[in-house]
Amino acid sequence: MDNEQLEQLRDKIALGGGLAAIDKQHAAGKLTARERIDALLDKGSFEELDQFAVHQEHNFGMSEKELPGDGVVTGTGTINGRPVGIFAQDFTVMGGSLGLTHARKITKMMDLAVKLGMPIIGINDSGGARIQAGVDSQAGYGEIFMRNALYSGVVPQLSVILGPCAGGAAYSPSLTDLVFVVEGISKMFVTGPNVIKAVLGEEISQEDLGGAKTLAEISGNAHFYATDEKKCFNQIRQLLSYLPQNNREEPQKTTAKEPTEPQRISSIIPSDHKRPYDVRDIIRCISDNSEFFEVHEMWAKNIVTGFGRIDGRSVGFVANQPLYLAGVLDCDASNKASRFVLLCDTYNIPIVTLEDMPGCLPGVEQEHAGVIRNGAKMLYAYSVATVPKITVILRKAYGGGYVAMNSKHLGADLVYSWPNAEIAVMGPEAAAKIIFKKDISEAADPQAVLAEKVKEYSETVANPLVAAGKGYIDAIIAPEQTREALKKALKLCSTKHEERPKKKHGLPPA
Amino acid sequence: MFNQARRTSEKETRSTTRIKKPMDKEITLKNANGNWQTLTTLKWEQRKPYTPNNEKEIKSEIPGKIVRMFEASKAGHTVKKGTPLLEIEAMKMVNTIASPIDGKIQKVSVREGEEVGKSELLISFE
Image (cartoon, rainbow over all chains, first blue to last red; front, top):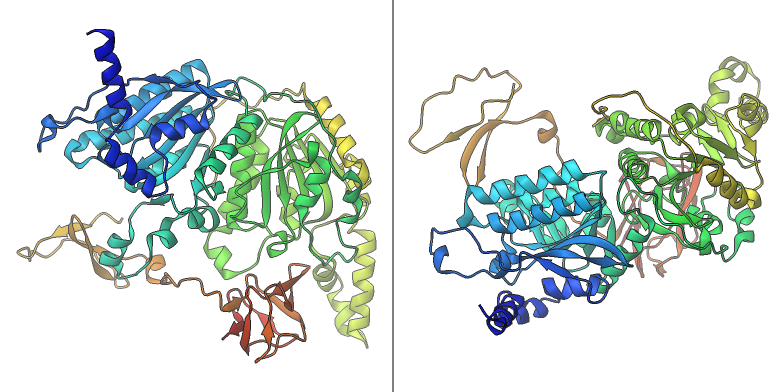
């Protein structure tokens, strides 16, 4: 084969399913697999693998068909100058359906990426299993799933849903670390609207069932939501800047920039402790350059998770959000935060916890939804994490929530409290009603006695001095000292080393 | 043990050997692979059917107490998106509920001082 023939073949393969199919892809508002790779990676950095791979199906007229690259483009490249492994399913080739070669190209790239210690990015745009491939297609999915699971916590794995990702295919993204979706383009479900209608008679549109917004806001299957593909790729590039290349490395340090309005920090929390505020404003007073890159921004808004930097170091923030549902810990919030804590732990990212939480959400719905086993995930995640763990109690720290939000008792390295914090086993009113039940019921004016007892309880218990007196809080700091305190704490913790008892693996609550 | 799911064909009339408890309910599920006779679970029985989100209804997101009704929240009033309508106190926190849309209020279903449950209808728009 001479050079010219080879080039012709390359050009043909690069066209995927052909010009008509590419036009169709563009008409649907989507980029092609190769355009996506070029847009995401550093310019000219992509090195393709297995360009000449051929499909392995022979029945049902498949022998006569040519499927360039077998419907997936794989290879390596760089993002912000750091290597990544990448695959992008090519919808123009038989709907991006997954046959054995398609799957083996993906698993081969994954194996290489793990051996070389670099993140894996998967761009999903596929009609699902290639029916003609039969059980080989199921085998292919299984081989991908197993690698998703085994490589979890070894190198970052990101999934980008840029088209349909239905049926069994939807499980691979869920096994990866973080999932990105784009408005109007992403569709992810196990059974589609037609099946639901046939089996249950319930009618729902694809968009409402598993469109980008549903995935990001209701089910929480997606961590990042963007309005177009370009913005989604920018999110990926930004996210990777906070993560190390693999679990043996630390995240890259950058030059620290001061927050834009650090002095605002002392005026964010309203003087009336029953009034909400946006805890992200506090994070932006603490983080370098006031940057905060939120993870799961739209789902379980009563807890905030995301990345930022303090003194140039990558940090994971977990913060109760009084603005939504009073900042209670419910099932979704616990799932969101505990997974994030484990994500930080696995990639050596220190965790800064900002606490202002009134407790767990009471109610039949939450109890029946398993708030016990779901809430327990918080306790589990913080307890097992060995990265630097620092807590700042901003205001309320009540009940089990106080324990769950990276308390000293779960192994926090340093716990700070702001002077006006309320730390107690329950709220003053509820506590006073129990402790002074008799005094109140026998009083001539029960309301007055209740008010007096609430005040007494608040003054004696609901303040940081009691906990500080017992050593559960290391220091009481003013809001405006918070960034300095965290800078020092993170520096101190940078040489932290903590061993855990040897075991095969733990059993997190499910 | 839930191990008795079984494909049924039209010809098949053979009775099952399953041990059925009195509270067990049997249903037939249809999917692309045929019809399946199976038992349901309690959770399945109690599941809520899907209802699309209706932005003309404000529902309580959390169980709590209505501590304040604003002037604007009266039936017949036309309000702008973002107009404060009521305050609900839940979990030691007072939250202001603002109008999600520009619209005319059709009905106010709660009063000041009232306790509300989760997903309870508070205000509906025309």
